[in-house]
Image (tube, rainbow, N blue to C red):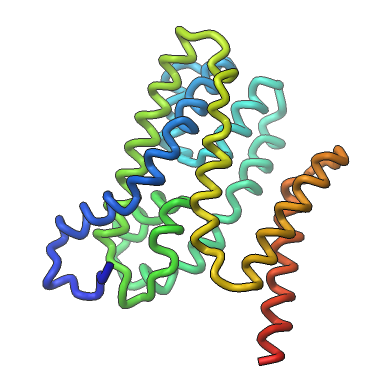
Length: 236
């Protein structure tokens, strides 16, 4: 999809193009949003507080972890540090996107910064500065935000009236969403190696009962991909 000319493509059309491009990931995340809403209710949060997590925090994995820690009675500082670490990847996303949005007005930078998720980065992160269009990104990000919050509301209602909704297997949506994000990015051998090392390390470390298995597996994957890229680059 060519986004290079904003004059020949009205902003409204670009907005809807972004919405359509994001739709597969938006649909895939619905069970995840339902799960986040129901878990928030189960953890003892009110309906308003549960919805506010999605409306303000807007970070699926961090929300699930935070509600689990609330239910377990974990201290606020531990909770904040944990969620900060989980969402730290967004700092890398923002660095990668900086050259695309740094020249935009503040209102655009704030809006797109707030809407920046794994899914939005998967849609727009690969675009060059010339290809990137703020209306396209806004359509993708805002549509995802609205669907995520709607799914959360459904989960809140379901969690209130349907007992043990977490037993329905909705957590698979988390894995399915990230699979849909990761697979299209595997275009080089270093990336493939990073994914495989992360996968194998995660399974092994979890099986071994090691604390922080997911974090260690992620670091292992990043290091292996970085080393492979340097080695292949040196050979070329």
